[in-house]
Image (tube, rainbow, N blue to C red):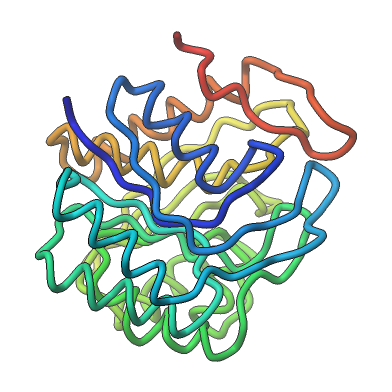
Length: 259
């Protein structure tokens, strides 16, 4: 059985974070492991509190995973402090990891800022450079590139700027654009567009977590990056089309629609 590790925050309402990641990994019939970086008090209406785990304990969790059940791919989500980012990078380098997917989580679906400025700097300078692929949405790509993104041309410009931070791939998700919902996969000057299918469903809590985890499971399965992104997008479209409707706000996806 393939093994996939998620390093992320916990969402007590089950729609995002490690809970979404574990469901996604399990729905792909792989073994899920989790290293928790923060506890959040949140639900479909918003984030009401964040409690960071100490960097020492994050490091201990990572040691326990890598020394016993070595993962075939790693997804990294919410990391809210520079100290936690630094210990993650140190451990990933120490254990010579592969197939690293970084979802640079900066905002919750409800717009809540989830990362400090010093953590933002560490994210750019230490974590993103070791990623095989990063998966920012429009807002996150704007933060990383320093430019406003209004259309697909701006997405390419932003990807060009961000590409200076890493040798891996950049997937900018276009779901928040007004003129299209196409996603851009960018690598070493090559732009590959994935046509976005707009699903009439306002329940999008945890879509970013889910997509990045789905890419990780495909990489663990040995697919190349382009195929992994294509398969992950098909999975998340199915999870949205299942039209699960839970909670009073932007509800979760049906991660297990295919079981």
